[in-house]
Length: 294
Ligand code: ADP
Image 1 (spheres, rainbow, N blue to C red):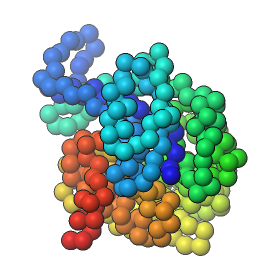
Image 2: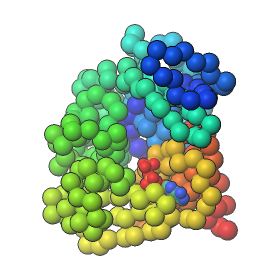
Image 3: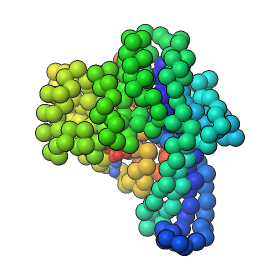
Image 4: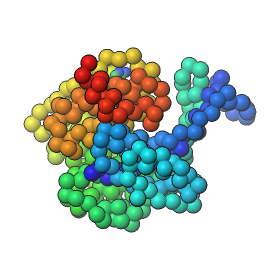
């Protein structure tokens, strides 16, 4: 199983003619309320890829419907607990030209404690993986406790912040970053220089650098694997990275070889960018099989 310590956000999406200006009140023409957050999206991708996934997170007790949505997707939510703090949420304005402006409130996601982590890691199997992102509190404890249990640890430092550099990075077996995160962590711009940095400073970590429509590069101990993206008509790249991570880890944690896992993850995320939205654009494994069979 994959145990994902991750954010659960409620995305409030407003269609507006233009972003609201200082002192202005505008009407929205359309409103949608959706389950989101990198954590929840990655759990959904793992579940749709066919993995057993246990999500560990916090929401406000008024929002249990969102937990039900995750359970319906096949996610074990025994360790999604309720608190009195508002759930993590995002107020998202979208203009007709598809630009967005977002206000994010971390809320309950920031109430994850070392105790919650201990509790969730109480019953694990040696083959389990732990996954986390940078949208909840106590990430250092996730990394440390998972390693103490002898589990393999995947970390997606998104959204990137200064604090990432102070985490116990030696606990990470698999680091998954997009190009911007790779540049920020390494302080370098060119992909080959970024690779040189990781090979020098992270010798014991496998690194996946996703490169948008240029595909992905994986740094393994003895080799570098480049896999191109599939050529598709992209309409919305929201959750492309989350889909990639869920699908890659699903295959990789089941001992699929790296190259095959990368191709599957590229196929799943290509399908995701062809559809509008976050969670609703994440394909299931039958869709991915069909796409790969073409
Ligand atoms: P993030 O969404 O985290 O910024 P990327 O933009 O690197 O991540 O996208 C993750 C993966 O999604 C890429 O490695 C690629 O396989 C796929 N992808 C992203 N954009 C496209 C695109 N325009 N066409 C095809 N595949 C894409």
